[in-house]
Length: 340
Ligand code: GDP
Image (cartoon, rainbow, N blue to C red; front, top):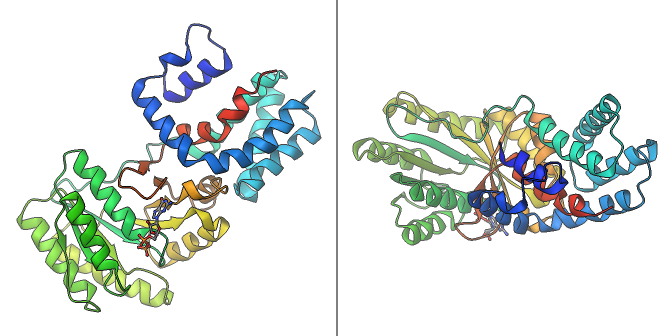
């Protein structure tokens, strides 16, 4: 039984044998961190939803309209909102459920299903079987890109991997120094070059070192951002060529850092970056600081790029692999707990 099933059964009382305490300890840790990190979005969502369910009499058009309003209010985005509401409507009509507990269960189930669209394992990083796994990080200034490089480095190191970081964001004042501080704090070596120097030179040194010294992961903090799309494409193509020369399997992941507090603007940035280079995954930062956490669903739906990590605070430990079930659950949990 997956996390979602265990939680659902425990909370809906569908299976009296499965109690809340039986939710596994490690699942509980995930749930707790998501709980804290998504508090603002949840509050926003819960306020509207609680009204919806307290005055709940039957599933009618007004119910669906209020439901849509709750999703839009959490920045789930128009297209995704319609998709989820339609899926909920279909399921309710198909099964004829009408008790609020059942309606809530359908709600949670459909949010996860519509997000997962087929449900492959979307979160794992693609690995290089023949050498260091190379991950490029891109994103506009201030979204939390460099911080995310540090946090992911920390997580990979905790998992027992040998990690190297490359400070190839030589344009933003302070970025190299910032990554150095992370490196010192986490005891992860950082390859640096001259300030304002050529990022390609840093990448060249880093990939050589990663190969020669048997590193498992090379995390590259690039200056990849949108001066112009042509610039960005050129710069990333150059970095990729250098890596491919030394490392025939090239780059395994290009992760775009997006600031969740910017809501639908994050979606626009994702679209623009994806036109310039193939983005393989997203790091959605600062979810702890926004009530618009529904943007996770929106981006996935519109661009079909998976969210791989979410940032839930500023500490090294405040970055989590994205778990759709735990995330959706954290958004709706207070609504599930309203008694009827
Ligand atoms: P960059 O310009 O994209 O490299 O951005 P930085 O990594 O320098 O981050 C900008 C600011 O956002 C810093 O103050 C970080 O501490 C903060 N930050 C990054 N990720 C998160 C997060 O998940 N939550 C919160 N609350 N702050 C974050």
